[in-house]
Amino acid sequence: MKERNKLGREDRAVGDPLTEVLRAGARKLLAQALEAEVAE
Image (cartoon, rainbow, N blue to C red; front, side, top):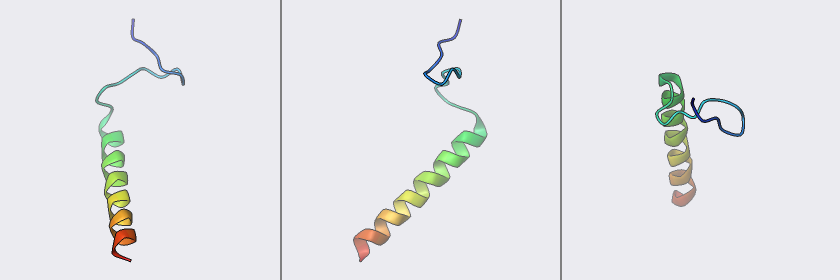
């Protein structure tokens, strides 16, 4: 039986492809925002 997290969803180490794409995009946006802040 698979372990469940606090939200009741299955715990996935890798995640589905859409989640990975969204996470990568979020990381890129955060990096750009930080670079812009530092440049000011």
